[in-house]
Image 1 (cartoon, rainbow, N blue to C red):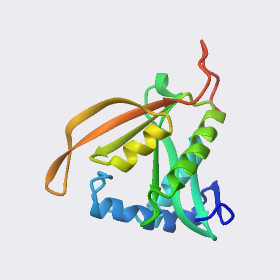
Image 2: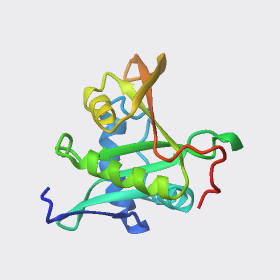
Image 3: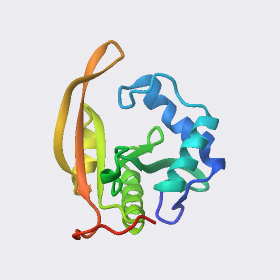
Image 4: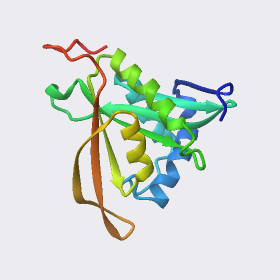
Length: 177
């Protein structure tokens, strides 16, 4: 990935196949995702559409090919949580630790702040030094760890949560865009 050829843009329906392809190994080969079956492109297209409607879903392209994505979605269903969201970032095989996660998150967090969100939360299955390092570098603070919360690939896994304030604190938050 070079600065000249890489670009970030809003995801669209046509990106569903590439996003599904990037995500599939995280589902099948790791405990990073607790899903048991990789979502098909049609399911991924619905996820993209839902995120774009209320939060954001961005893709990172290199020479016209989607190599990563990041998105925000609801944190919890209760009204009081409306200004908080959960975020995730995924990069294609061999693209980790190349700066792609950082540029995706920078763009995503800016977009979410523009829309009125104030706090972002990220959960990561442990151990995952790369994800913990990325989130720390992006200004996320450790909040806590759920111990033995998920069973996958024949063993229990812990999930750590980190959060970051992305908007100006105010007595009353603005209406969300």
